[in-house]
Length: 406
Image 1 (tube, helix red, strand yellow):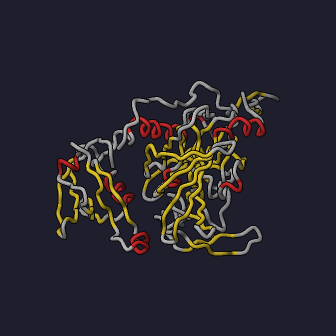
Image 2 (cartoon, rainbow, N blue to C red; image 1 turned 30 degrees about the vertical axis):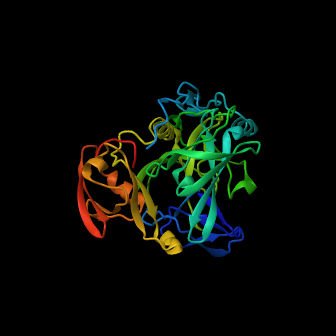
Image 3 (cartoon, rainbow, N blue to C red; image 1 turned 120 degrees about the vertical axis):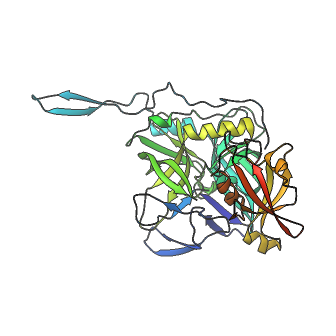
């Protein structure tokens, strides 16, 4: 989730998983209220075993050298999971006892260990309502300034600023970002930062301690820490048509926590907080991207600038939403701003200035819609892309390959 403030300091929340224009919420005194949604793309979440739709909130081709394995999970460390042993007492009666967690830290020790690795992220975003600031959270990956966060925290940003523990601010460059996994990597020019210790999300079990540190509701509540448990280590949900397997927790997450750490009892980051169910009759259902998956994506973004083994067109595009078009008087849609040399797009005849209107016959008007249709395909598939050029509609045949751009 991201918290927004426009130039007039009017606050509103960007509930990216909600495909509605008005969202109900409940104040602490039980009063029902309505809040307006923003102009960004909305998403919907459907849980397979639930018959009703659950409203879910997001909370908030350049190569960068061979850095494969830049960040690794601590596979050999004990993750603090409490093993179960059984003893026999009184004949056949079996009594189960829980052994003490090995290496577990106190909550105070966890905060001291992890908080220096947590940053605040502010993204300047232009919307129909004016220039706004989207705030989220990030996790320091390396001492020299690589930071992992959510794609939706920096999506559409014209400028990104990172504030590290202690208050120093740095302009950030987006190394790479992917909507499908909701992972982004930023880079700031800094040294001597405190990288987080990453654990192994595959070893999580229901009932493990779960701690969240971040910036709910923006920097006013920076370094807020909440505590709960792992409600489910593997919860399948569908977000914006993408199936995701996320960690479910009852640790409180709120707008501004997006991109921040989900932490185990040893002070290791085991997830990247990205979503919650937001309904007046639902409490304590938050989600995080498993760190094993998040780091795999992040390392690809650092090394390649894109996620490996995904079909690519080899183009750079500018996506103008209906709201942005109304605000600026532009034509909405997807405009090609660059075509990579030797890319599938170049070989297929796409040119700078083309407006992409359809992918395999499916109308597309945003970058997310284009990428969603593209990601249904495999490397080597032949697709038809429809473009508008000089007032004419043209169908182009393109063979997808792995490349360096969208």
